[in-house]
Length: 241
Image 1 (cartoon, rainbow, N blue to C red):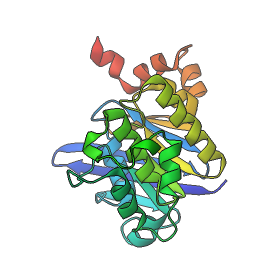
Image 2 (image 1 turned 120 degrees about the horizontal axis):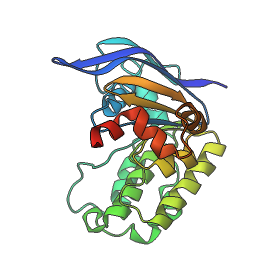
Image 3 (image 1 turned 30 degrees about the vertical axis):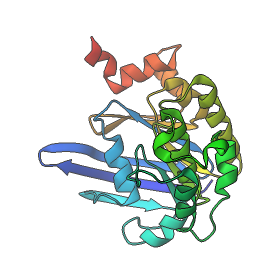
Image 4 (image 1 turned 180 degrees about the horizontal axis):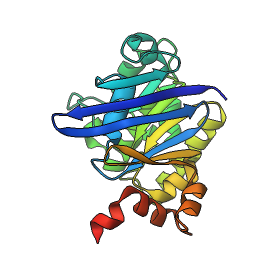
């Protein structure tokens, strides 16, 4: 199976804080890869370095066979990114934002169809600012998929969604994965990780403390419940006590 992300010995510091410490990971095409960890564990910095929006201090990164710093244009056409909040004009409509986004890409997906899929088809004439938190979250996922990407980065995928909307999003992503889309996600919902992720990496203070599957994490920590295994590995259980 082809590797679409390869990271070797990635390190990144901010002053005296070592945010990511010699991290190596690889992501295979057509899989969902989960990068997990407590807040401040290094997830965002890792993603920013993989995307080339931050400079790593050391290490090598390859995304779809490209260098994310040198090959920004070709990667831009093939990679989707879901941001938690966007800096949009206050009055912009959903349709205008989708249309503007689609214009940036050579072979965009049908954004109206995506809006229908994600349950906001009836909101395309509305101003983005009028959407509920859950609707906005679904719009951000749509925007990440408009490039028709080979690889998509999804950050806290279903925050703010109700139970049905979360399951709908999971189902759509599972369908997209079956068609070859590779998904790199972060999540604090362990049920989501169990349903979606083929492989996971758990970070603790910038270091990888676990690689493998959910089942392997449970087995390695003698836990029946994945959330218990995650809390042990990530150090969050220790911090809470």
